[in-house]
Length: 375
Image (cartoon, rainbow, N blue to C red):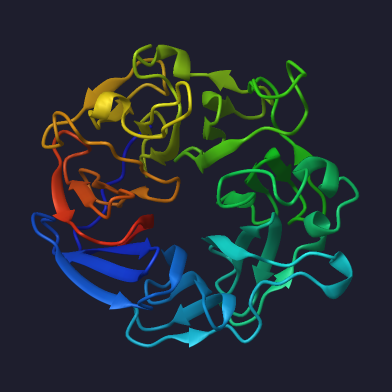
């Protein structure tokens, strides 16, 4: 597939942490970044996302001490913020409450005011007024199989079960995917009115059934530059799906056995569907979820996961016991592509040459939940 170059422009990274929001801004060269913030100091921010449709609107998913779980919105790139007048919340008859909003996704390009949000426990919400008010997507939240798909509201990740990786097909606003921990990957072809599991071929080693329809634990799901291809980082490995097939292919088998194929985040190239990056973590014994052997590295594939190359120039050669969460690894739209990740020890690292070399962009921040590029 021919690659289309993106005009040079500045890059801003939105860094959502356990104690607030910071920004890192660079000019087109991306050689140095200026740290800005904090905003929302003391609030837990799970996600901060810029709207690529207008490049002005930013949304943050916050869990605050006095307001509870909510969403804040800025229409001037973070200068001023207003809280949503109706944040994501379940109806009284649903018998559960939102612990926190975990994931934010802008809607289709043809629907400029639409956003989607995923929560913990697993719920799907939609805003049609640019994040001011949110309503539950009843096709999932009240689906007759929802309880079976989701399991207990207390199961899932250490911070609770989440609905995440909300993906909208750029060709069709009615075609959507999402991932759930726990639950699996699900698909809708009617704008969320109905959903079906999409988990064939994905291992679920923690379940008694060898190939269950649902109950999996995807960590991160990404739509590639070719909307017919999806990649998935899972609790049990790394996978690719080429539609219209419905069975995932294990591409983690090509990773070095000493490193393994388990991680939390996954990043795709914005123009090349064959290129992706993953940040592996130690999943042995008690699942320490740190860089294997204390040697942090990014692994890149240029051929859809058939082979992988270790990229660690500029990263610590040893004693780097990092964890990178599922939303804390991203790519910008430049050529060459810049990739960036944040660690649970409060460091942001970046590469302006597609992972050939890295350098520290910020240190001593709080635990980082998410890093997103706002070009």
